[in-house]
Figure 1 (cartoon, rainbow, N blue to C red):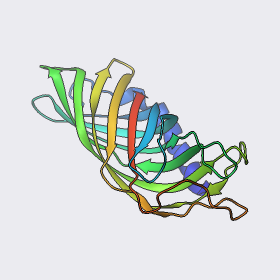
Figure 2: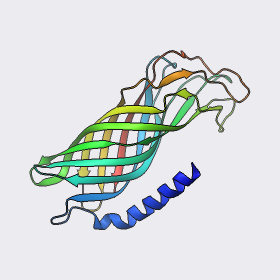
Figure 3: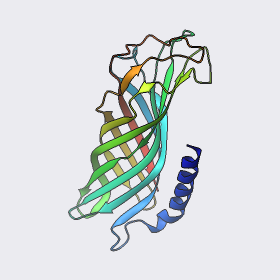
Figure 4: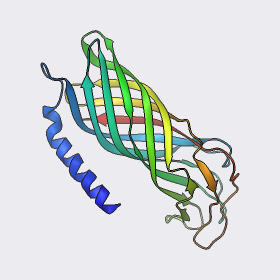
Length: 216
């Protein structure tokens, strides 16, 4: 895992240095660079008690290819933190769950104005791979009460949003709706073996995210 993040950091550094020479200029057909974003995330389903939005973030790379008639294709690889907040404040409850994913977002982009890609609409799909999960509660304070809870390692989302492109940066806002039930039994227990709840271990969990990113 540490080797992966070292390699990713080197790739991001290279991307930042090169991105200003990779904008659409003249006959150029592609852009490549860095994207960094913040998000509001929660769960939908009945496996947990009522969930609330929690903040997350993402940092990754993108590549955009230009086609005809104001159509573009963008692919992204982005480590991202998602999850949800709760109000279960007891020593054996759960107040926040964080999930670390790598997202492989694939977007079709359409210019809103002819021969001008300043304002665009986006739609696409996002396969994601779960790398780690953490459960936090009042008893363990800042350190996780549990890790690696029983969740599916793969998620799949539909994505839609808006993109604003300027000369040296862009702003991208997306809604990401998880299609898969990622629950694989939960069975959350803290480091002392105590069960964390209340949960419906056979219930459903689906990710929902609102994400805004800056692209360079």
